[in-house]
Image (cartoon, rainbow, N blue to C red; front, side):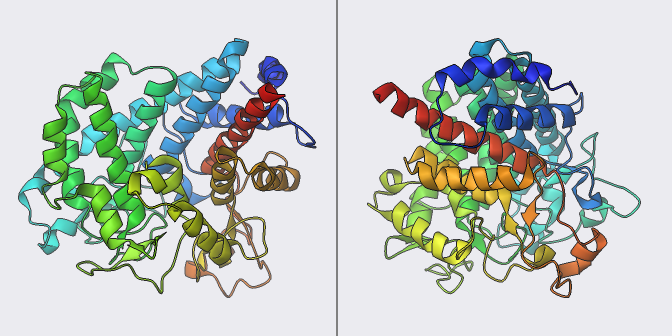
Length: 440
């Protein structure tokens, strides 16, 4: 798998997808990124977020789900070339998904106990009742010479307690269903656990936890609610197709148990003001935190979680929100920051986040913006994608937790999620180019 020769077997795809006025070989970019992720995936499906940095050596359910989604996207893109790499990508994606499903199984006993705890009870926020955001090779709390996640087990509002892990694993299953089809193991898992999963998600969507970026533990985040909204929509879709043994009425009943209008109504009521989607609100507040504005997680709501102008019934909400995010997060730079005031690793600009904007731009026909981001990253980093572009490496004094200094005054290298986002964004561009080429 270390030899790049066979990766070029996807060359047939270059004849089907023509890129106009580009200095970047998109086929090579995509296949090289896929090859890297395949090589980083262990036989049991375990994949470190970034192997060269101690805190990123664990397996994140979030990051790994994006990796699986990207490899499934690559397989769907390259499968007609009979590429060995396409088949290897599919195999790696399936192993990651299986590992993540086993992770849910591991923690289902604890999750089921949450059903009997009132969400206003402080005990509700104890990590031991939730699925942690990361784990070790055997699904246990990750432990190394400098890390012991088990110490977080009885911590309330732990940064390891995040609400998107299960929805993102379901999103990877949705992509698998779309591109390849679910396995008997997938369907058995869903039938055995979907009610408990939905009960859990239905109960937590109105409660606070750390955000996608592991900050603001005392807030509710539109991203988390949108991720849970997707999970209910996915369950309804599988139910309608008779893939799982639960009817739509029961799914709706679970979703509306804590708020009569469900997850989508919750987002519309509490996170939207003046036809703009905001990122945060305080618990029990009637309106979003307008002063907090936007963060980069909202682009994922539009890209993956069935949140859009049509579903919300608010014309132009995407455009207005995207414009606000562009003004707040990008400035004059090609890549965005996560949120105003981010000082993690001196507040760098995130490759994966810029690539998700490129994905959005491409799917909505703005290829100039999409290609500018993809080609900027590829030209600058030449296939070795870090987590961030550090904005001021000469100022390590602005360094939350001394992370930057501990990492040798360089960003985290070869972040798996950055590679995954490159695959998704670059393929989105090629798919849109294909449409234009056919029109010609």
